[in-house]
Image 1 (cartoon, rainbow, N blue to C red):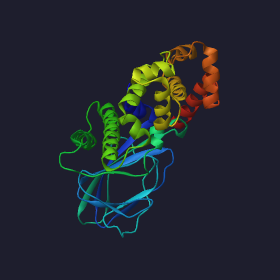
Image 2: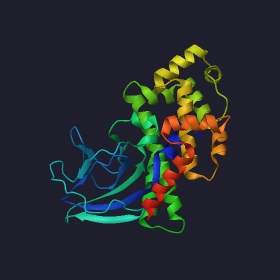
Image 3: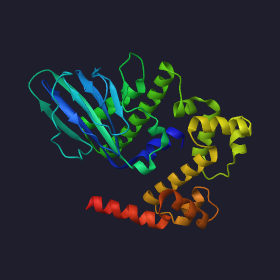
Image 4: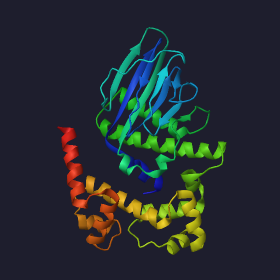
Length: 313
């Protein structure tokens, strides 16, 4: 797995949600703050205004994508001065929700999607993103993003056999394309910094890719530096400056994040998980995991499984 693929795979818990909504003027909808979530809106037809948590309203047109990675509250409306109505639907819209709101005027259709996140294991790449990412429609730009939107809207409009898997996969794909587009845009409008700069730096990107593709390898600062084509000292300095933590500290964090995912989503024994993420002994793995997550691996698995069962009840 490469870095962005891993970020998307790691970021969500449970099932995503998506809804195709028809708005008829006059209308104004509040989307309250939802800590521990990330969501995006896509304008499929018509136009509207984004009312962000801070700053001026933003006009949106067909094809525009808005991503809110930190669960901040916002509003959508047909007019920037329109009063916003509190939501009236339940928290879980499911995969194929469809609804209509507003009056009898001009129609705007949006695609609203969201993920639940676990703040304790959100990848730092998301923490460095702004509160609101607006990707406006530009002729010829991001054709893969537009294609994913069209496919997703079609599946939600007309769900058929296998639609659950298709929609979930398309939501992952859309998330990846949004992140790609944002990092490209960030490099065009300003000097990259943080993770945007790390992923754009060929040497550091090679090292990150190596860590994510082979986390169990016996990496050292020197071997990662060699893989990146840099001296040990130069690599350690550049990696720490861009990623925000030293190479082996990031390697450890990623191994344990991957281990937590395996404990949640697989039947592998604790010993097998330890081996798969690069620990030579179950004891060493258990100590490292407890320092990061506050629970021994076995207790963590039982705790997470218990929470999942409670949510499903």
